[in-house]
Image (tube, rainbow, N blue to C red):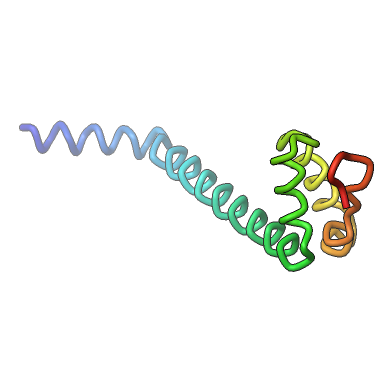
Length: 99
């Protein structure tokens, strides 16, 4: 009797498309996390190779800028055409401790 109820409930979920919606949400979250990780790693690697990463960390330590403002500046450059070049040549001048 329990097995029949489980089977009936599963059939209801399947037939009402609930399972498909759950699976879609699950893979959507997985893709978003994977994309976030890949993009962040690429940006961080670019900044590290260009030497900007350490300069940015110094600015944060010196409280010349807050992490949210800096992240926004990086994001604007990251989504621009030729973003890698723009990001790696980004100027930090105009702030205390800038390059």
